[in-house]
Length: 208
Image (tube, rainbow, N blue to C red; front, side, top):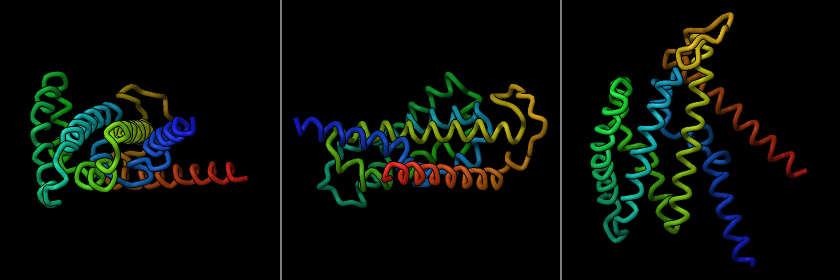
């Protein structure tokens, strides 16, 4: 019974860490460059998270089978090569269904091959877990990242152009500065600060 409880608590912790407590973008600040540059509207953000999710999940899944007996530096190179192999069918698939979206991603699409999930977290966290926990961890880290990007993009689009997905919202005023990378950087910083403040507040309330 205690083993089942420990397993449930462990799974719950993994899920909460991926979604909230260690959110990849709002807490850990991972893979933020494409968000700052590209996620200035909901449609582009959808393309961004689909691309990121496909490449990251399948690259980490295949890379987890690389033997740990191989030298660390070589393993990282192999992860990148696996990412490149995953990229090819991913770009073909996405170009078939969303050709304009792939063009909008530009150089950031192939750069997902070397994102910090694959290069850094694979060795420091994911591959130290059992296969089941690793898959759960990867899935919820990706979901946490994707959710944060989509919410951020919606707020950014409303503030920058008064639209959601290109549809007018009736906003009386908007600020074009948030369409620019430096405006996105500032807004993302405010998002992260607010998110961390809420987490800290919830933690304090629970401790009382």
